[in-house]
Length: 385
Image (cartoon, rainbow, N blue to C red; front, side, top):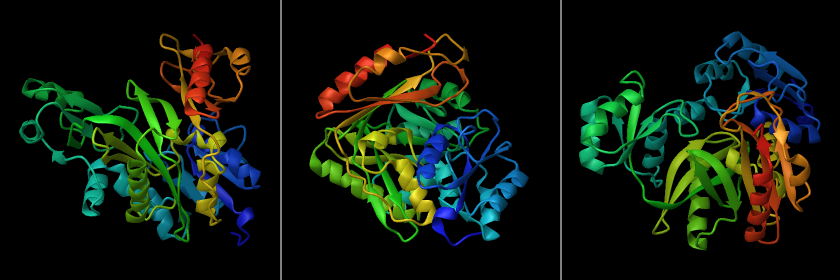
């Protein structure tokens, strides 16, 4: 449509908070944004230039988005990769590429690709029956992890197989053979971490600092940066993330989730081909946020500086347990009195238990001080408690 980079029109599949934060940074550079989402009141609806209201399996809607824009990206990976491949074959630009998305969507294929590239991953195997599960138990010992190969997030699609007696019930919990499965050896780790990496159209790669991730009920609760791990482990994690970008020919932001073992070894858990919840800290904490670098990458601009400005802590704000309905945020005035606290509320009009509704970020001169202020803010802020 246009050769002037800043006049390019960007299409985003998905109108949630990640898309919203992409738009906020894209608008600083003047980009025109078209969003596709089934919810006319999605978080992106009030700040995008156009909203196509459609479900994510509507090929016609994808074609409309492609016709209206110069480049398409997406804010989550559970979308129709074949439809994106068709658009790409007609000359439309889509990043991250549909081919890399297709591999990453299937956790088994994702792990196979990384193992072939000699990247560190936990032991894994394909599961097609309870007989396979018993073999996995003999191979890895109990407990081990059973995963759906596609569609899982925030702990959904995972279950622990504790013993031989648990095999049948675990198999039933994850679809009773109707969904493709895989098994992974249980890893004893001292920390879960993620490394955010960005790769541009000219293969420039920028890596963000390593973060320490804490989860509650398999949902990310807090990210603290820099992570308290030896420099050697941090360097290894960043190198691994860089190699992941190369093997998947990644364009844009990728998040590489990893385990740090008790011996400070790095093992890759999963890869997400998009900006990530654990990278929200980069908005205030880094020179260039993950969202700005994602936009820069997919349109062909040079990548920005990923340096950490100050130690930073990010905490997710979830919908209160026991309440579902209109969104009301309590404690805002008191929380914003805390020095260094930044508040992000995503604009979702309804809340439900454990739904991601916003996050807070604190930058301070030490990680301890940032954590202290962040915890105070977290106790004050409640989504309709």
